[in-house]
Image (cartoon, rainbow, N blue to C red):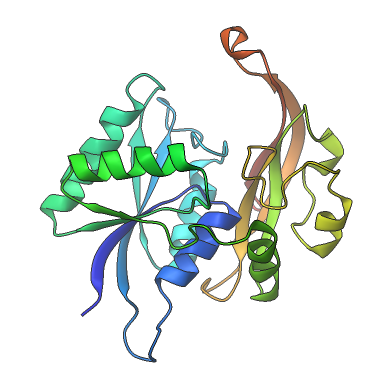
Length: 232
């Protein structure tokens, strides 16, 4: 039998590829993981996701296309961890035993994921762990998944990269020192189509805006898409 699990869902390409691997069948039988929930953390208002600034309507559309229920947690940064653990504890009570994450090789991220899962009596699993980053980038594209860049760190990329398709052309245009997976936070993506999507998620970018992080953390500039459903 497949192992009941949730996926910590950002809506981006790495989450999408990790989910693909978690739901793949190694022997042609049932997939190893029965992914019952996509857990997405939103800000206190519930308007946009904490990780990639995506609106709820688009993340719900992703979940619908993937055929997996969306589980939403609302939190500020100060109570983020407590809220996350509470959501995991509720799922554990419903029989979910494992948590799936899309991180590739950042040890502090893995440490946190293992900690919060342990607090809820779960086991953390990272399907992409220690895979070569550029290989993963090309695999995402070759499998037929599609994603668009929705946010960039202005220290690494200009606003002209926002709205670009995540494809071979983009990878070739990334400046030296910018990771192909954006694993260091250089950019974030929104995955909208691919083999596990029953239908593409329609979207459009209304505008690109520049925002700044908190001054106490350096005031980093970010260029971010205001992305909505195509019919909005």
